[in-house]
Image (cartoon, rainbow, N blue to C red; front, top):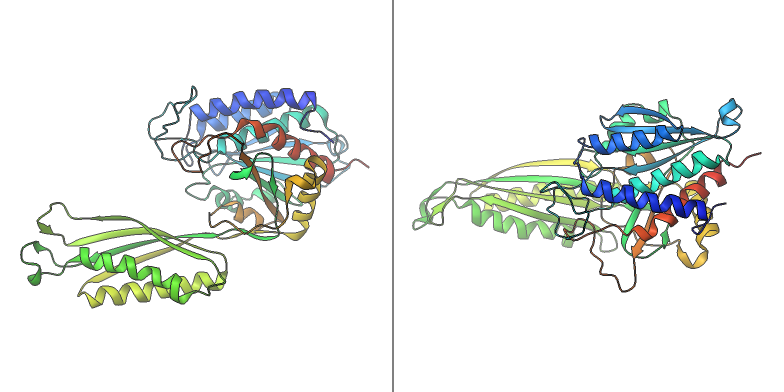
Length: 397
């Protein structure tokens, strides 16, 4: 089994850091990851890994067969997934490799996830100390567009059968090198809601002859919070965040309408249903109380990520062998962040893993922050874990 200090792996991790910083400097949004996809494909091909491109547009899969699998003697297979897309955020880190594209930034660590999986692919291509097939899944559009869903719909696991699929996401709050691998739900369902409030515009000095959608919208925003506070089990978890409000063009004109948008996060299917039902009821009633009318568009987004027990046990075993019990968290509350790895884990047994990157004495910014930066110090850990997991799961006879 490889270790984080294995000289060969350490050298690959140093290269992976260079790839990561290059990807960071050239961020690409959902389904636009053409440069990143080309870089990944070129690296994989140069190591003798079979590359299949054009899955969900810019997505690709690298297929590597172990010693016996290359001779057709083993049908065992495993999938390892990394996401490639960036976010529409203006970076303000001031780093030497800061984003060269205004308004786009790798603010969630997908540059690190991609480099980490590339590093593991190179190591495994050189060693091939396993019996079976590894599919390296490089996914587009995790942040927006559901690239994981599109890959599954386009036959990902039919074309590339996997006994199980695994994914890693950096944890900006977890200690550097700490693995969090838990059973059950790890990430929330992520839905979105658009609310359009219609009133009757007019002069701001004569509000009594119109219907003010701004006032109605303000009450709707406040009333929506009672859906969590008074319609959700206190022992359950749910979030309703209404994050944008748009309406009006002048300080002395009551507008005709106001638009509100937001997100809803839940962990349980029944809570998801209740939240949607109650939001529609409360928003409609509140608007009517102010003489306004509303149109509500509620869209179900990513389902929750639910780790499969068997896959969790295997991932925990690999982390334990690599890092020891002190660096493995087996029981941790789920995050309310959404993740479209859920589509993969809903199709084959799956496990989503968090790897801590918060270093003592190093200022830490959370994901989606304009000052966020992936910590390259965890690249050797991530690469070693991927390689260890493959060698564990596809042990040579």
